[in-house]
Amino acid sequence: MSVPFKKEGSMIQLYIIKTSKSYNPKDMWSTYDEEHKFFTSIDEAKQWLSETYPKCKRVKMYADDKNGKSHHIGYIYSYKNYDWSHETGKKEHWIEQHWIEFRSVKTIHFS
Image (cartoon, rainbow, N blue to C red):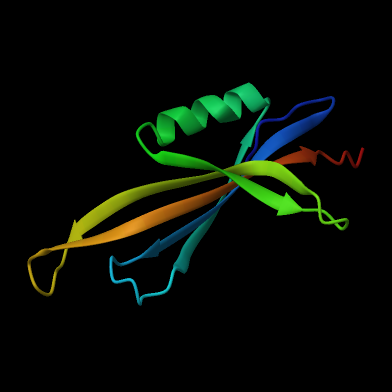
């Protein structure tokens, strides 16, 4: 995997966990993909998010530290999706949530 090289400081990583479920309330959410995107700035990452998820519902995502304090670490983007079933020939609908965490990544220089 190739990432943009930044000589000093750290890069921004978006750690994306993609989940989905059917409209049936008894069905469970399942993870179907993980993705990593790298950017040279938070603004560049936010621009990519606004272009990738333009009309999605967005809510803040939090994580607790060891003292129990919550910290805003990213966003959950939710949207409805569908595809044509190859078996039935009908549209199949489901809900998707992409859990996106912002991380700071520092490049290790071996030379």
